[in-house]
Length: 504
Image (cartoon, rainbow, N blue to C red; front, side):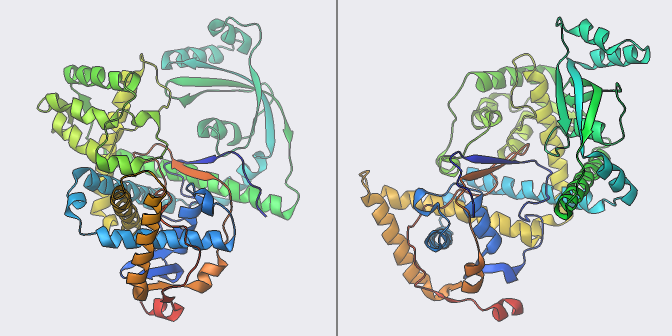
């Protein structure tokens, strides 16, 4: 039995964190197909993601059989609306629509590239797992402080090498009587660099750890005061801790593997920004980032992003492109022997909105953070090219993922058309929508196949949850829930046979 949450849970999924996620990067298992409508399929995984990783409307927010039926009918309705709209040239020729779908596809292709070049090349040493396992039960009591800048970090390193006491080093940077203290325990979701520094090897009392680069240009220095030990006793605790350790080590090595891959890919592609142009772009961007709260959106973007929480670092992306047009033919940067003009930057930004590494940026550090955002966009361009070269754009998982976003977009577009046919704001507008959906279901009923056996096995929760990925151009994990029908019966279609699926 699930506890109802009064507050919305927002799940943040890191860019590279694949473990425990519904498998975007794995091949589609069509024996998991829940619904087939012509050439479209809805898998069990699709059903779970769209019902659990998005906010459902009040009328199907529960855990009952009727809630499940409304969810399934809504997903089927989305596919039917997409089918009815799939030849709409006005939308299909919309450049924002094309760029959005292309950007979504390329984002998941880069994630698969990480999976292939990072995760799948990890070979764990049992001794390393054993050593790490023996340390993660510790809960350290520490004193700590942070300093800004590499120069300060070097000075602290020199002081530590000369046996300068921890208190004197702290006093050189802070006018405080007491040094901050806290406890640090094993938590894979905490700062990975601090976790690695603390739990990768056995530490001693009074040992100094650091300076550790914890954030862009910030370094932490830690002194170990002592620790307590929590021993895993039950079989479940032992298994969970072993899984956590294995997962953490795998990710650490995967990130290292991938960093090596990226470094090899970018070898000889040093980026040099044109100083004059960069100043102009920075002056334009900083006004949008810190002043403008309005986002210029075309009709398509308005539909797609409606009610979707967006990070502040996306605010400039809607207006930035138009603002840069006057600089089109100016030199933006050189990448090795290649020269980019501002128009080349704008072209890339159409499918890859800028992503800032930090969520809170001061005006003083904005130019540096903008430079990082540009550099990350350039790096991702070459990673995307590598993914295309490997044929990842033809993988079933990529085609299915892209199709789901495309169909969700087509359905939202069609929903807007249906609702706009009724000019008043009364509930008649939604009655008209529901009637249209029922008519579509009747029209296509003979071509809707439902695997009722799989459907009956699915369990859902009533927890309000919204999933976002971090450090990616498109943070919303799955399309918003399709509020298209409140129909709670499955009185149409035909049974989807497992034997039929296995033959295809």
